[in-house]
Image (cartoon, rainbow, N blue to C red; front, side):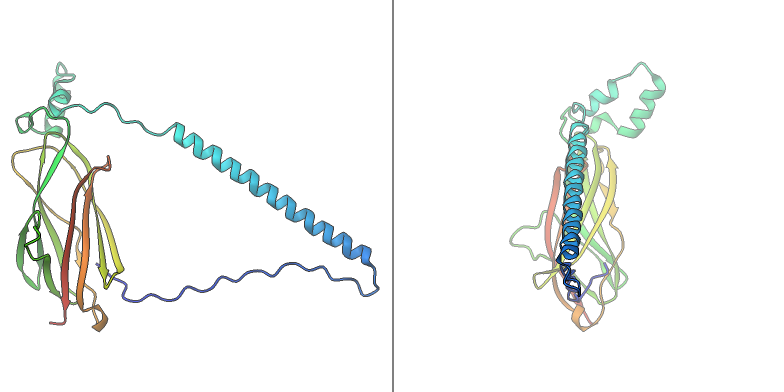
Length: 241
């Protein structure tokens, strides 16, 4: 997790000065008036083109909305396995992909249960914290030395149905300022009796005097259908030694 510890000021955008039409030295106002009218005409043409472009974008957006993907009806895992059951090769492929029907109860809604979250790093022993974290528990998830590489380890179960495109967003703040945000994809998981264990992508703690101290973070898991399966608020510390 490479965090930005400083932010530079944005450069102020330069604005172009309005075009001025100077009067000719010989006092010929007609030439100046003609130039001014040409400039006004060009500005009107540009405004008209912008309006046309805007209307074109609106039409394109409308077309996108009309052709928006609409998912099919949600089927239980058992129904998906029994569909096309006369095709032996397809049945075997589905059984391998979707898992065991015994791990389901016919419920169509996917349920993802997170059991624990841990930290793996060369600088400390592996630690695991049970989920969910209650109000009485310490939300300090880990304390690492600056410049350390580490992994977050998740243990979770999938019940009832497939979870498609399980992904996460991990956002980090220091003193109320967001300093890092990482995203990752875990993948698609079928329900099974045994829980899954998954390592998130490797992160690196920042270094330097400004990097040390306490951080707050939020780890959020969603699937392709935008169903929220976990929102975990936690803290961690970066120290010198």
